Amino acid sequence: MIILLIVTAIILLIILWLVITYNGLVKKRANVEEGWSSIDVFLKKRNDLIPNLVETVKGYASHESNVLQKVVEARNLSSNAHSVKEKNETESTMQNAMMNLFAVAENYPDLKANSNFISLQQDLNSLEDDIEMARRYYNGVVKDNNIAIDSFPSNVVANLFKFKKADFFEIINKTERETVKVSF
Image (tube, rainbow, N blue to C red; front, side, top):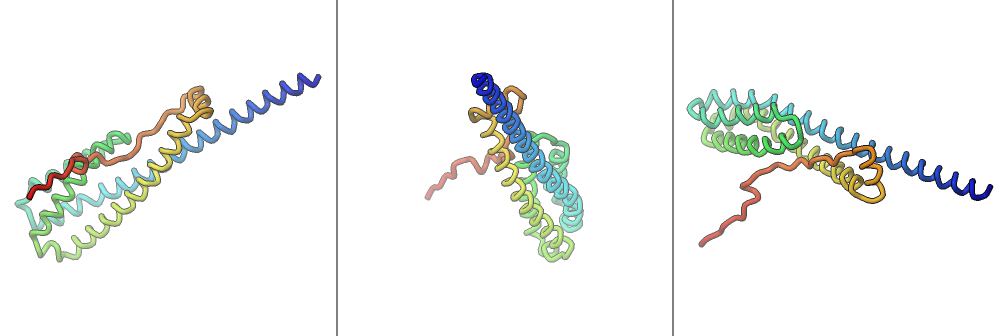
C-alpha cells in the first residue's frame, strides 16, 4: 500500500511538473509574440510617416530623386516583410536610406527650417526610440524563451510539444560590423 502511494505521488509530481513547465513555455511564447507585435506596430507607424516625409523633401529637393526613390523602395521592402528574419534584412536598407535622406536635407536650409519637416523628423526620431525600446524588450523575451527551450529539464517538454526557438531582431548593417580602418 505504501509503495502504491509513493508511486502515485511520484506520478502526480511528474504531471504537475509537466503542467507547470508547459504553461511556463506557453507564457514565454506569448511574451515573444507580444514583443514582436509591438515592434511591428512601431514599424508600421514609421512606414506610414515616411511618405509624408518624402513628399516634404521632394518639394525642396526634387532633383534628389535617386535618394527619394531609395527611401520609397526601402519602405516598400519593410512593409512587405513579415517575419523577424525578413524584417532584420530590410531594416538595414531602411536605416541607410533614411540616413541618406537626412544627409540630403542638410543641404537645404529652407527644408531644415520647414515646420512640417521638423515635425516629421521629430516624430520619426520618437518612433525610432520606441522601436529601439521594443526591440530590446523583444530580444529579452526571445532570450528567455530560447534558454527555456534549450535548458534541461524544460527542453524535454519543449521538444515533446514542439516549441520552437524565436529569432532575435537585430538590424543587419554590414557597415557597422566592419572593422574601421584608420590611417595617418
